[in-house]
Image (cartoon, rainbow, N blue to C red; front, side, top):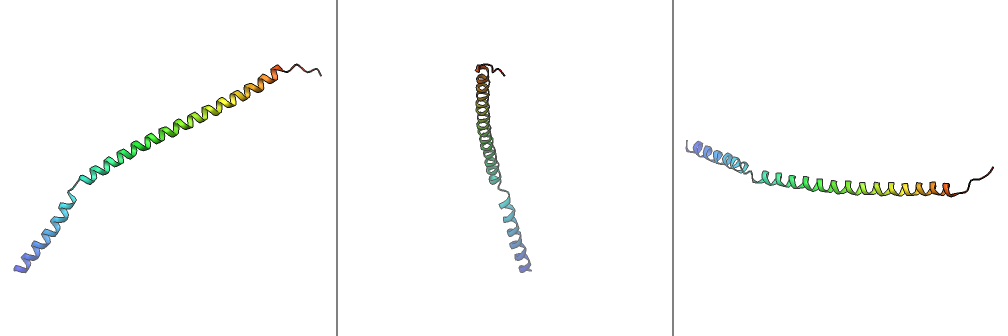
Length: 83
């Protein structure tokens, strides 16, 4: 009889310790904060990459426009050729 009672007490303590360990929500809160900060950093990094890419495209297109304008200017400045 005492052995059954002692076994029940030991088992109930073992199960209750596991339940108490799971009730701590501090880790979940910190994980959520870390995820939010990581998302913010990713958004900033994406914005910087987009800005850099846009500047690159604008500069290349401006260069191509100048190059094309130079070709047109050369053709208009040449004297007409008689054939």
